[in-house]
Length: 305
Image 1 (cartoon, rainbow, N blue to C red):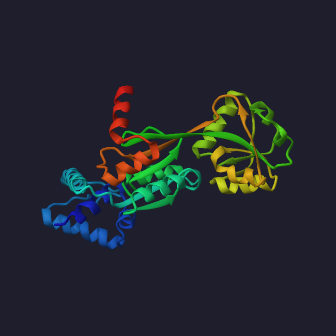
Image 2: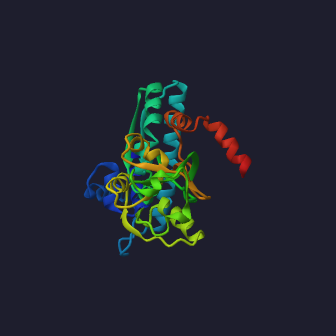
Image 3: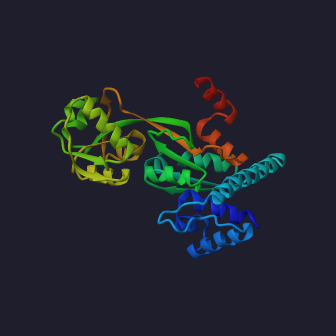
């Protein structure tokens, strides 16, 4: 039996889906099913309770899953230790990130990282926030990058940086002339928002409720680029991360105005699966993003606990 069998089986258990496990491993759905049956023949026991409509393991299957996790962790640990012994910084780092971070925050860090460690390959996928968490939980990526991180038992959160939320308008909009605007002045304006399930939208809605402002969006979008395009044609105003509009403001396609009051900062964070063995390349990537060695961050986390 090969490690690949255990990897496919753990992916199947964690996603509870033959199709998702197939996608994670670059094989067909039938191949996942065949691998599972092959393991059952090897161990001479049923691992999956096929009498149930939903995916469910037998008691033996649960025990095999627990053992598979240990085996895979030990293998990852061994590979990491061998790389450290050879002082090798190489491999592939897979990142799942929301559009605003991936397009506007991450590029200079990746450029610096690849300059320092050219033997490492970095792959970036752009996802909605909820899917970033899913990618981490299913171990389909090494790191996730999100705004307003949500605490989860299976995920470690490393603070990355904070961005400022600003009001953006068409350059000829009356509010564009202001050096600063009070949030209450937005009442009655045509407002363009992110989709309701996006964390930045939830945070802005919370500020509106605290200030007793009723502002129903005239448009809603799931990504920063479409929001900006709508504001550029004067379809309304929007509240977005400052770093995402610097180029448009410089080119005078948009105006950005600071907003008075609390709640207009956006914390960004790095996510990884709790208990995951970090390779030397992964640790160096975290250091590049945070400017701190992994050991130093662990001490800070323990001090706050």
